[in-house]
Image (cartoon, rainbow, N blue to C red; front, side):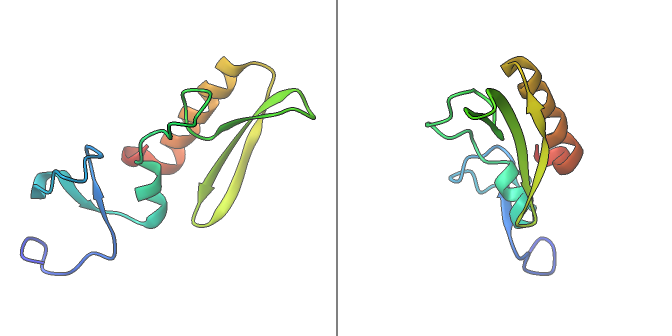
Length: 98
């Protein structure tokens, strides 16, 4: 409030460190943008967000969640293609929050 003149609905920590509350490290964000800027989960098997393996198809799926809706990007035969697509899609949909 003191810096922007209003209370943002949601705040994102640019460096993903919730202890770093310097004003330079904080920015207004939507819930989707804030989620896009989260660290990869410890249970992530592939080293990139938004990639999963669909055993019934024998392929990797890339899917992004934006504004509470899943956006299906595609199925890929190999992990590297899926990773590349996931990273490109994150930049396309989330920009600086990717």
